[in-house]
Length: 301
Ligand SMILES: [Zn+2]
Image 1 (tube, protein in one colour):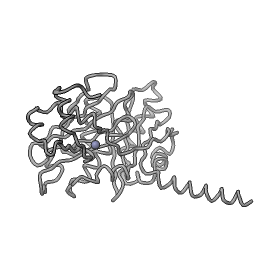
Image 2: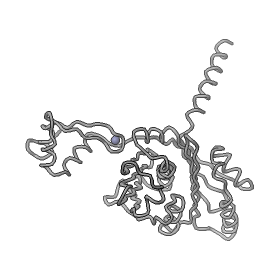
Image 3: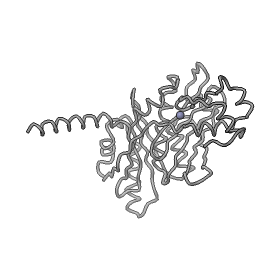
Image 4: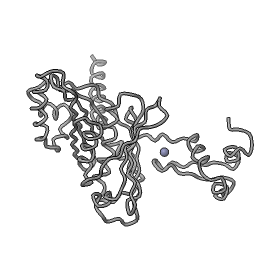
């Protein structure tokens, strides 16, 4: 009897623990009998970790959150091992925004703005180049597409890119609270028959009536409320994590791409310090290692 009591207490504890952990998840879904599929995401801890060392002006935060949120949503549509990078390169106050997700939903990102930037994100992005790079693990050359800026709203940029350039009719919705970021992507695949086409067309119109703030109700609740008359098939949840893929080897590679004299002139106390621009992790590379990188002595093991 005592054992059972302990076990149920433990079980309660574990289920509470699980509930509190279920904040960073992405889930694929299909609406049965229609040609609509998609994915739905909720991130909190991974987003907080990603932004921990970044300085983001208040008026840019929500767009930056959307950029980070949409990367795993796009990665969820990949049918191969790899990942994607959303890169925004501006000419004036907005220097750079990068957000990445691999097909395991490991995310990382960074932002660089001029000091004391006061402009809105929509103004900052107007002269920027926005590129989406898709990396296929087994292919040498990544595919890069340019996203039209338009009004500078992330939702319409992504919808326009997927619908026009990728030729897949798509709708995206975002919602944020103080700590969490939510997103949902709907895509319309080619119809298999007339019945499927009719069902899809009517549902596609319903999607426009979505109130994005209901995304915080939870994945199942949200989808079942919109498609109450239809079967929604929700697949296994995947966790989304903040993880930077930087390592010492990649730092050596970066050094080898920089001018030799530039590297040697920055040596202080017999080493140089490099900082990962995504996670701010510090790497130390000694003069001996630099010599090996530039073939001054024998190769690194
Ligand atoms: Zn890093």
